[in-house]
Image (spheres, rainbow, N blue to C red):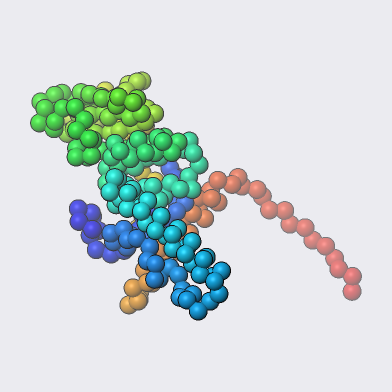
Length: 267
């Protein structure tokens, strides 16, 4: 994929917790496709009439699903559709953190309707022409400067913050207050200085990064293997994830000393 550290290979979309525990994975297979009527159902033309009616209902269901996904794809894009697929089994009311590859203000409003809390970074072309200062205008401001815009329906806030450059974030449940102080390196003073930041920045930095931590753990302790079969990499990747999940679960249990007992059996 372009503009990614690893441009070639198998891409897996992952839903992780803060601890890097993997809850769900979706193998990326290119642009979203609709369900195929021919592949989804067998030929039942020689079966009885009841089977034909069942087939017709199934075909209508497939057409309905295809129409819904086509509408979502047009509105949120292929990246936004990935998020909607991954949150299907997430409990309502959960807090979700996503990066700017997936996020948009439209997606924030959609997840708000579904009952989720969301915080995300945003790209300039996905803010629905939000009236916030441009990068050139932010470049003239001091470090720590920020602006915020709230949507008319009060369901979304977009915050622009000046770090080394402008950063755009969006949320439906957290905003500016209470402000926090972050440590940043100052080239002129050659030391770390205090920078004012909105609460949304602190919240995003605190809870974002589960997927990156998972990738780091796999890179530190990968399963060594050699194979010319393309599917072997996917299988070993799944095993890597399973091992990390087991280690995360086992670390939550307290240590209980083992009690050994001996007994004598009759002859």
